[in-house]
Length: 124
Image (cartoon, rainbow, N blue to C red; front, side, top):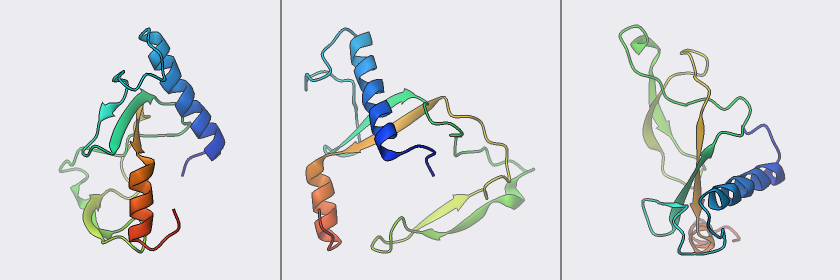
C-alpha cells in the first residue's frame, strides 16, 4: 500500500521525470529523448527514479539455509479476471527488509490499458 494520495504520487513521479530531463539538459516533452527505458513490449516503458515513498522497502531477499524454512509458495493473481501464477515469497516481517533506494515506475500506454480493460469486460 502506498502511503500517499494518487495525486501526490502522480505529482512526484512527474516532477522526478522533469528533473531528470532538466538534469540531462533536454526538453521533457521531446518524444525522442530516451529518459524512459524500454519495457518488455512496445507499450511498456520504465522510469527509474530515486525513492520518494516513505517506508518503501526492497521486496526481495536472498534465500539462505537460515531462512529457507520461512519461504512460501502458492498461486496468486492481481485481480479475479487474471490467471493465477506460481509465486514464492517470504511472509511480511519474516526476513529483514532494506529501504529502497530507487523506484521502477512501469508505464503502460493508454491504448494498452484500454485493450486490457476491454478484454476483461471493464469500461476503459
